[in-house]
Length: 451
Image (cartoon, rainbow, N blue to C red; front, side, top):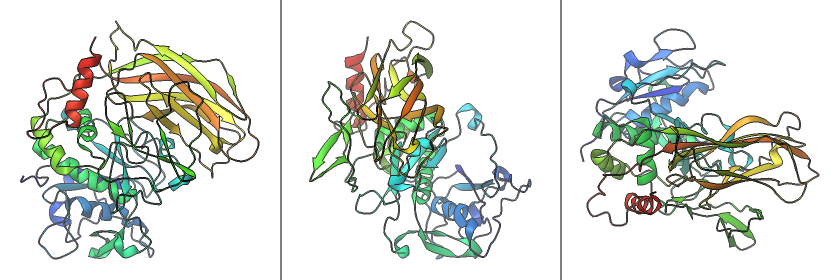
């Protein structure tokens, strides 16, 4: 197809970039780089004996590593440029502002490596609407042992999940060297950034929201599967619970379908990125309609969370119909929740949409033993209801999961809906030969849901 990332700059916001590395130096954009740790324009990593600050350099090589030079490997967007924003070697970060002349900068974030002990919805960047959160899978399609699950992950790429360090991602390293041991979701996210660089070369007018829509519509389930064995509780709802599938003595997260026919997974989001597909669709893409933010309602009365069973709160909304902020077609949904409990890590939250889509917006985090602070106005985000009509009854389910005695109080809950009033994909033609594509499935559903 001929797209190699030309004229696209990807900024690595990390611990620095070794821009003198032979695989990077010809693709380094000095004008877009800065060192906020040292307050100078040279984002060179601080060298230590333990190679601690090699992360940004490794990520850069995955994206723009030179081809045909016999050094380390080849980047996903090898004709693109990379900039270094050094900031993670100090205890502060700088404000992020909209870029690309109003189209919006594309922020790609790793979902996190906390494994079953953590939930990426507790990471303010991974759970942000303004970022594309990327998880990882290993070469057989299984989730990696370090993968966190959460409802804010949009898609996945591949990384190392084995114990052999030589089966990692090959990329650039410090001192002009190479490594085969780069791994984690930190290796998956740069691959995604490289794919997005290809899409932006194909269509430089894509907005930050366009790229999220394209990610949802072109990522594929393939053979991705969850190899973990986890019990999912009964949520006590009258509607059928299609969210779990029994396998032996366990219940596993499986692929589910939301109300407009999009498959999603609590580990992999909407699937693994398909570089060719996203580039081809970028070429025919039409910018999505304006985005609105609807405050859909709130419950301010405190409720005790039962020690056993579920606390179920219901909130009916018209999705701001007839106002300037009406939302008919969802993008992101935020449940803004305040609670405290005797053990925060054993408190779990589920959000159920009017169309029956279930999102686990907070999973059990066994190493979080906070018994005082809880969460205050934390915006738990889900992408699983993408494209749905938000009008109707939403349910928030709160329950404890884990050993011991529990007490807690849900203090308040509010719902924020983000999306469009107009159908987002009107006038976009499906790609030639792509029968029953995700685009066609959602377009058909939107015609059915149209007022």
